[in-house]
View: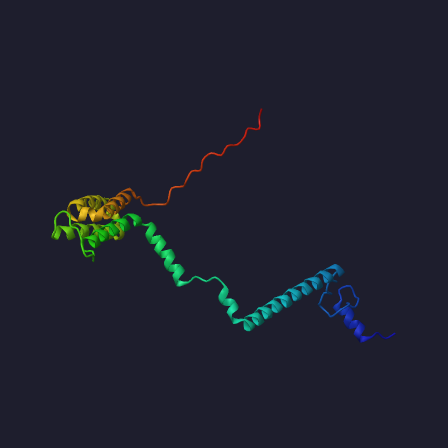
Length: 212
């Protein structure tokens, strides 16, 4: 009885003398369960649907932008006016702004009443250099309070004294109005403190007792 040479080669390669199921030296691949194949197919379908939806949304947005170019301009964007307003607010909160402004306005009002373009101007007190020097000093102190807030205490005290001095030198303190502005502004600058604003404490709300 003759043997097939292919069977002898197969038995020589097989450790147990039987021909292997696949190629020599390669283990057969494990079978993938049915639930694994179904899960992989479902995940692939979900990813494809998400990608398709994203592409559709992008195409729709592009079409809307091309159809209405002014639509994107309606979105709120930081403008230079808003940035300037925010910068001015931060600068104003870092110094006694209203105190310095009132002092500056008081000095300007006194100078204006001293040289008002009227047919008849009354001049009370010293007429001459002092009538311009004291309100000019008051206006200068207002600027110093605004731009040099570190020495606001010294400037505010001088501003109050200069405002009171205009009662004798410059038309009764610019007919009292400029003097009042200088005194109020100096007082505000003297009492101003740097730092965050104090938190306002709300009053205790009345809660009726539930116990009898």
